[in-house]
Image 1 (spheres, helix red, strand yellow):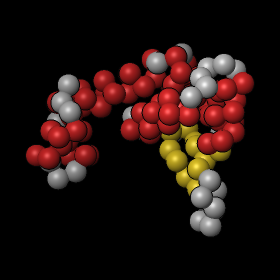
Image 2: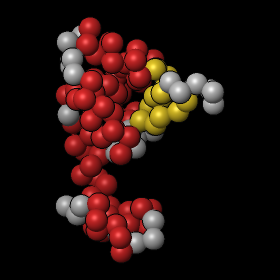
Image 3: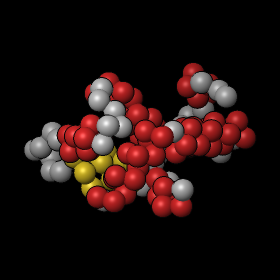
Length: 112
């Protein structure tokens, strides 16, 4: 699988995604995202709630004993964002609180 430095030969990530190697990279990233048990649980929670704040999501995961470390939480959230399974938005422009929503790619959790 190519690493992120291989993108330098392309003007955009979308252009890279249209190549065979780019398509394989994105597909592999997506499969790793949805097949990981912690990330699956995150997707299930976000899908059920539709929109959820970062702090509420972390508290639910801690309560359910899925994870207890904020760094591991951040890593898995970043992975899901990178795989386009969730998106981050702000509740309102003045508020700095992150809110997560499931994307069409993340809705695969309904079938797993």
